[in-house]
Length: 88
Image 1: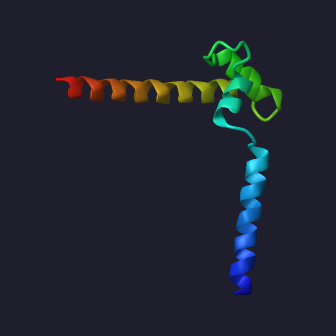
Image 2 (image 1 turned 60 degrees about the vertical axis):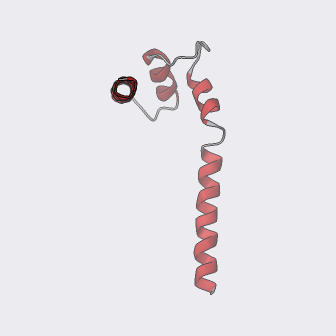
């Protein structure tokens, strides 16, 4: 019983620490990156945000942006194909 309680408390503590470190909604996170409030995140905004904390270099942030943008483009193209198939 004590082991289960200790394990649960560790899990709760880890979840709380994660929540504090990543506070806010996805919209809040998006708005932090979208510096000009245009509703779109440009590569320049993404790189500026990621390099501001010193965790990423501009090169690494650009690579990550390209990877994310590619994934989004791929997801949109799959969604478009599904819509075309349904309307046929």
